[in-house]
Amino acid sequence: MRLGSFVDLSHPLGADTDVYPGDPEVRLQTHATIEADGFNLLAVRMGSQSGTHVDAPFHFSPEGARIDELPLALFAGPAVVVDASDLGPHGRIERRHLEPVEAGLREGVVLLLRTGWSGRYGTDGYYDHPFLDAGACSWALDRGVRTFGLDAPSIDETPAAGRPGAGYPCHRLIAAAGGVICENLTRLEAVTFDDPFVALFPIPLQGADGAPVRAVAYRVEE
Image (cartoon, rainbow, N blue to C red; front, top):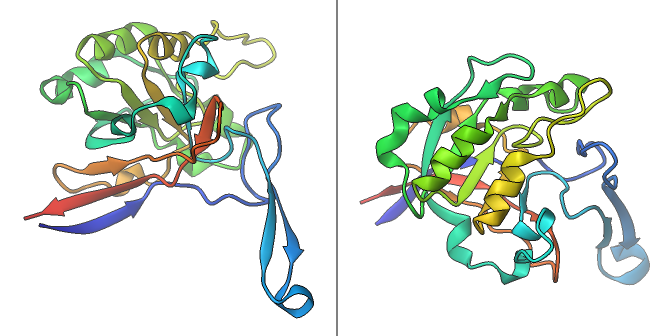
């Protein structure tokens, strides 16, 4: 067995990292240099939801598991990619988008929602993203899915002035089921090979509601 066709699904973390409205900005500062100290060392400041990241149930459930308490099996598995690229701003990813891949939805599968919205990363339009319908989310959960990911800043509609949102229903449903969500993915359109495997392992921040990940899709070859 060997691994091939790697696709990096992560946005880099740095001064240009797009952060959810109100979240901490990412700050990378030089702490030590070879010239002054004999080694290079970087000081890092960011939020638990910075960049491409995973939400733990604790993000929306006071009694939910923290990111460092979750089984690693939640963060890797065969992936099913749903094409929701037909949607425009504030489009709703419905059950009709998921039904074509129903046969592949089961426990241990990573469900990836491809909206194409990562092409708007870093712009105001990024927050006008499509989002998952709560009924479709429940339908996927009923089929055993516990790991969700998408190439947008949130699996729920992002509230804004004049558009208050509806209380983050998918976050709450997935948290109640003990599942996880990976947000701010990118390059899902490059996952064109059959039977992709995805790894979304987070930094084990103690007691945290989430953590950044290096998300990768790859093909397992015999």
